Length: 369
View (tube, rainbow, N blue to C red):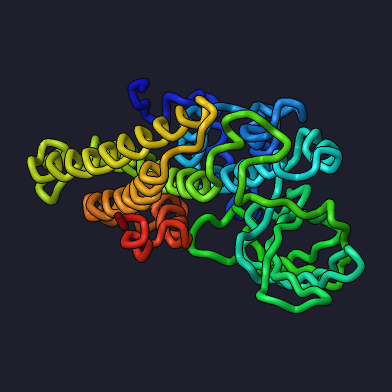
């Protein structure tokens, strides 16, 4: 396995500077700025997982994971929004090719959606009438499509089943509901679909390998894909927070005017936080590489490796959060100003940590043998 790089080495310093310069404006707008979006489209960051036949990058997963972590390092809101949009664009390999061709050849293609089973699809004469509402559709302000899960009601009622559907913006009503503590520029609004009827071609299935694409990316199990990409948002933001704290400590003075960077306790805390974060990242990337190699060989990753990935992802997310919490007292009053990058990073990190895939309540399930 290649030596694990720091997120700042994955994308250019110029791009990081552009992203961070725009971050305050994005927060004020409550969505990514035009400059940020232009950079995203130019660099094709939303196209990491789209098949090459739709002009996507179809990037190998370990490299793509480092890219997504680096974007979270650059800025929490931008990283989170790209992660959700690029991750959902993976669905292009699972949606019927004629429909995918029309949706994903758009260079600005980006899906907003939800994995929650909070819609109902009533099947009649081979078509589906959809009703439902979903929370947290990140990137909804620039989305070119929306995806949802719905319970199926048919003419012959039986045990409830579910399907995944794709919709277009004119079929969806976005609500202005995202007024959060952090990740304020992700436009993670709720959205609703009322009485929209669609054909069978709108359905896709993520529970099995893609029936339309043969690449290893489309054999990687979706649950572990989602866990990895989500937890890397926490580790990326935590690396950013650690660097900001180091920058602050470099010139911060104590009560007697002494340089606190020379304080042994400060040095010890920095070292512990960095060691905790880096060891968790290394374990997670090692397992991701192992599973990826199985996919490249034409097989499915072993179940025990997938189970370990789920555990490692939750562990890395927790390590990111707890390492930041170790460092928080070192900032002093400097972190309390909401206009600062340090404060924004703290808020973004703790908002992201509330995602259900990163909940510490899932440790027991992931660690079962």
